[in-house]
Amino acid sequence: MGMEVTPSIRLKRRLGAGGMGSVWVAEHAALKTEVVVKFLADRLVEDPVSQARFAREASAAAQVKSPHVVQMLDHGILPAGHPYIVMELLEGRDLAQEIRQRALSPAEVAHIVEHVALALARAHTRGIVHRDIKPNNIFLCDVGTPLPFVKLLDFGIAREGDQNLTSTGQLVGTPAFMSPEQLSGQPVGASSDLWSLAMVALKALTGKNPYERPTIPETMGAVVNGDLPVPSALSPGLPPAVDAWFARACARDPGRRFSSANELSEGLWAAIGLPKAVASSPNASSGPVLPPAATTVSITPFEPITEGTLRSTVNGRASRSSLPAPAARPSGGAWVALGGVAALVAIAGLSVAWSASSTAVESRLGRALPGVAAGSAELWSRLRLATPPAESSAAPAAPSAAPKPTPKRVRPSRGAAKEDDDLGF
Image (cartoon, rainbow, N blue to C red; front, top):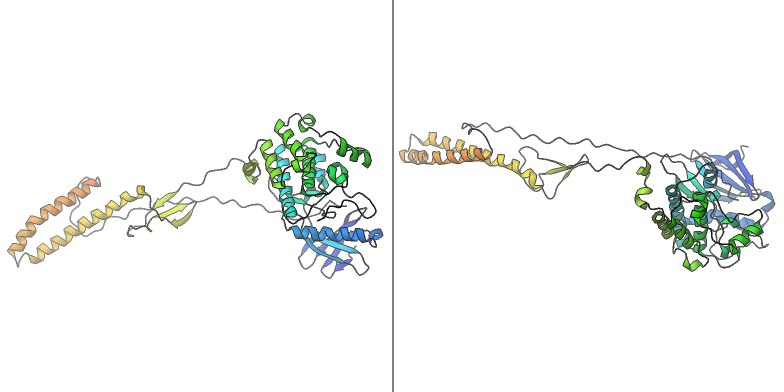
């Protein structure tokens, strides 16, 4: 306890141990957070194959660069010769634990498959085949949302080649979830991971894996030679479309399976009859999706009516509208009326100023004024005013702006990190 791994990392407590090594929680002083440190077992320190597998786990996960793959922080060898890996500490539980505790709905399973498929898609584009997809290596992170954020663990036996056995001939992987070609020692590609992911989905949907047997040889024989399971026979509530999806995902001929992890995921959403974009949204189980707030338009008083005058308030944010709405234009009639009143005032002023100097001018103005007044009365009548206003220099009251709605803000929840229960060995 308290052993220093690096100047910044000090062990705190052991999470567990397996045949390949042990896993510890440690304090990372530089990052001010807890991390996980995995050590290779003492008996395997001198084994080059085990050392290569251990190093591959760190390098392969780092190469994938997916948020759905556990993050690797460091990798090295202690002065005593023990290799170690430092990775993020996750909060939640693995899929194997979840399946033991309760039955998962088809939508939950499709969501989990979708996240794992995103991780595999990134790995496969880089030529990396995981080769050990199983419930224990799928971690459901609790991030405060209705559906978990899923991460794929343990790239320890991931390869860019097609070998499936160690140098001693020992099978590496979990037979009940491995593809027939992987168990038979044939070349393994991305389609082998798709078989395994479909078997994980079957286990999550039905709580059963019909290929599991008491011994490894019996399990291998069932996978290679046994009949393909029918999901609806194991769980009668599943629709027939899920049977067709599973039959394609686990076709004996790898060439007849789905062409990619994303296609497999989309096929499962379609099979359970739910749209992927809606069902996998965090809002899917928290209530109906509300439509956006209505758009309101207001005009600033006494601002010239131009293309930039109209301000559109969408969801509480003001912005200039490049195309003004026709419905907002009638208020411009007030400006026409104001122009008519101004003309009356100006002409009246001229009449007073010139009355003493020119009878002819006075006569012409006298004939002009009734026409102007009549035009003004007609304008006000159009604006549905009861009587024309008296000639005055007072300006009309400014039109009031439409109130702006107050938008509702929704803050996404965030999760923390804690212990990773999966030893990955």
